[in-house]
Length: 321
Picture 1: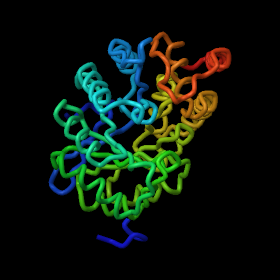
Picture 2: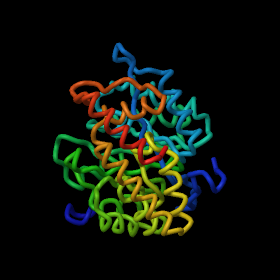
Picture 3: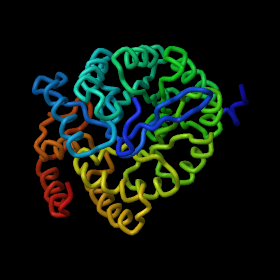
Picture 4: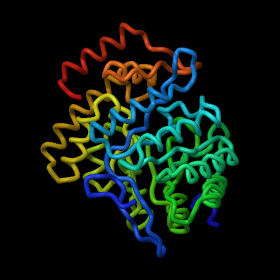
């Protein structure tokens, strides 16, 4: 172990899982526009299974490359363990192998994260991601142990993405920590980095040859792909999936002029949606697209309906979908 300061189903090329040979294993990785879907609730506040199925179909029909349930946008920390398992099961069953499903399993408790990881394997998910624990400030050594305990309960060829969002969790995965984990465990295939920091993304890319970096900030999709990142985990893509898929395709093809033009549109959509931080607004916007998903779970604040309608009018005026 290094010291705290330093510790730190094969698809066609149009889809998003590639095979990465590491340590003699074939390990899947994500690529493209991956959507951290909201969790729909019915009028009684229960998980709305039918709405969740409809949302998956809507996104697949609009060409997104992967689905990521039970993340930040999915209000995972406000769901019970059984609700998180239900959401994961419904999504995996509904998607049925058409695009990759990587289930977010991170939790404040290591034991809960391990339980959710086992469950994701059992239901046939393509992989998992795990945010750092939150609330308590943890050393890099503690973060390493957390991820190694999750790794210990999944098969050696089952992929895991680290998930760094220190603005929410209070715990930052140092590049040296990511590199240590990536070099020791071949199925730690990459990291979702939600920091608005392109230099940090570059540091993560250098963790290991072929290490997968997914941007978690929609403003940086084109720049991230241009520098070698594999794509974006995009909350805004639920509202304008076609736009974000076109943006990724242009950047991946090296059509920089088109990619930058589309990035400007995507950035405007993202700004109007408050960069994904207002989940109630995001849910209103998805309903505006014809997929009612209910509202948020308290203590999150409900968006003013008048304000939300004004936002969607502006997005509609952009002519994106």
